[in-house]
Image 1 (spheres, helix red, strand yellow):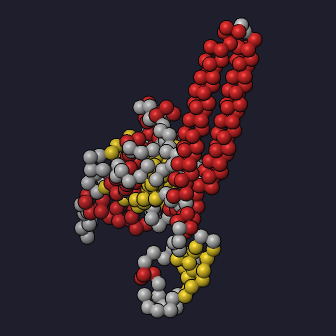
Image 2: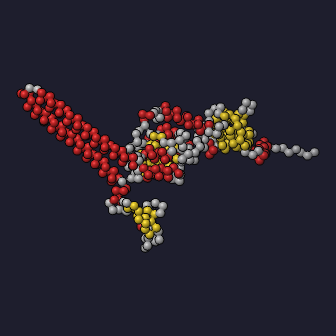
Length: 398
């Protein structure tokens, strides 16, 4: 009689483990989260359950770090992973590689709401905490991806509306693991550099998960601590992030953020002209009313007793002289201020520089040629002068 094969417990468990891992492919399993525990190692242990059964599950540190926050007890989720057997205890379990709420963005929304309530309780969302933007910044800081369309949109708007304004850019990853830390660091460095008057923080649109860097607490704290006002310009108009809520100004898009940061130069010039006209009219009206008052008082004096006329007339004359002198002084002061403002506008105008005899070389695409190395023999370019452009061609070497 042949002796039966006797398996050790380890052999059986190892065989069952191999059978599970080789036979059942990775799959999605839906259920409720119970007994969620995050160990010091960073691994997460929990149970997936439904009305009749439960399944032990584990999510190792690398995958667990992708979660926006730990799911709450009873959250309905779907878990993707593979079945295996924990040989030491002979228990089979699900090794989870991805965990989502049943509506795909539920875990992200839970984390968003938790942080929003926390910051609100600290008073960081209060309107009275928001700072006003400087009306005429000399330099605008931008924190965004160097490779994204958001940066190009911001630069286009600033150059069109206020070409004299400097733009200082600090690049940062705006999506993926660790991107929140990069954005927060860039805000702290650029905001505290003393180089900019206002800061635009943002990126283009995407899913809630794509935009998550701007929902992280570290970014919110960096915005609150920034020494200069911050404009949050994340995604599209329908996207709302934590950075939008704590920033001094929320712009629906990066382009709108740039528009909020700088005044339109043409509109400013028009407004200055209107103000000048109004001030001139106001000065004329003041002078006219003062003369009317003087006329009334002189008439009253003429109708009074002869002995009172001369002293009163002299007093009125002196008063009139002082009033006219005051009006002339006001007019002179206002005119000087208008001249000063107009002079500053002329200094800032690129056309004024051309009017002084300078020329601006540009290639066929309109890009400014700043150095000798930018010119090569045979290149065509134009010289922009105060009243037009002159086509040119490089004949000699650079």
